Length: 521
Image (tube, rainbow, N blue to C red; front, side, top):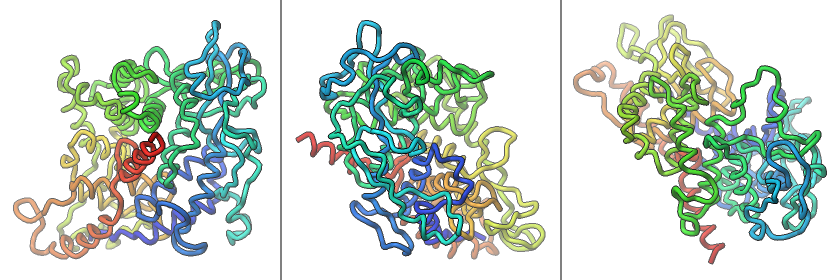
């Protein structure tokens, strides 16, 4: 039987997760910003974020203190430094000259040292440090609720992350910075998406510093380094101090190419600087060429050239080409003839077998007489979820990674949309949120990507087909096909449309464009 979409439980789950998190999340403290991103984006998809102010009151279903979260994120903005971008050398002249960012666009000296480091870090794990955006008050999700009541840790305010500066150009030599106080491409991406989702106009983002950093992070092959640190001594770039056995391309794969291009897409105005082959910020041709170098023999994309194809890296590559505006051109290239068909076939083949809807036990029955409920494992029922690679088990997050890839290709109808939707709904937890597989406890990552797929499935209409007629449901399956399906359709239909390539609500993109246009007037 079709599972009910428990919207209110999911609202409570993500709202609570913004305030308190279980102890196992402590290991992700350096990526705390990503956890906030998943919660905020999920609440936005669920229609719980206002354009300004708070949403609800404390202890109600959806409490989101927009202003406090925005201030905390700006407190994670990093100060650009002057370095050679490769791990050697110290600071250059003019590191504290106080000029505006625009006056230093593309600044570098004869030794190749340039300003880099603009962006955001993943959390307050370094304690109070001077930053680029001034003083901030923050409400952080607590990961240390020892007493279990959630009272003492809620609304915990951190006022030690600001420097009190006025937002001028504070670029400094690397010697004056903590060796790990650097921006990260992925953290900058989630920071921007979260700020936009919360209705911020990004007016306090040091746009020129971020874009200069992107330019300095792009390599000759078109990929992007993930970390912006530079300088000598203890502050030298992690790329110059590789751990034993690490690959040279471990921190410059398709994930960071996608994040860098998404940042560029959000921060550049096509009216002021038309996107194209001559873009001054990134080398579009090189970035696209790197993505295409990751195409494998079966049509999927690996994280780096020569690696096995994977659902996550395939989405990152296709979304990158889409944001660069070259996806259709790449698919039509003579040297890649047949790639589109291979790619679609690979994606569709990742969906596992569909459970039988007939049988003596009734439609949707599970062997053993038990119905999966998102908490108990269903014995013997073949799932219809998506697997990330061949010969792997299904996983709810790939509903979005692979379903999103097909969405960008205009091939969502190639999937069995209802079967995939039912699998995702079967992974709902009675506590709210979604687990990785049927029976797993919920986690924030899989919960967000499950919601993202459900939003896409409604937007694309891949679950609207009727199953009556040849090959469809029989007379005994009417209950399976009618009331619950309508309930699911109505409930999921309340969710916001998703900008698939950016991973955020489509309405936020247009609102941000209007805000930036107004600022430029």
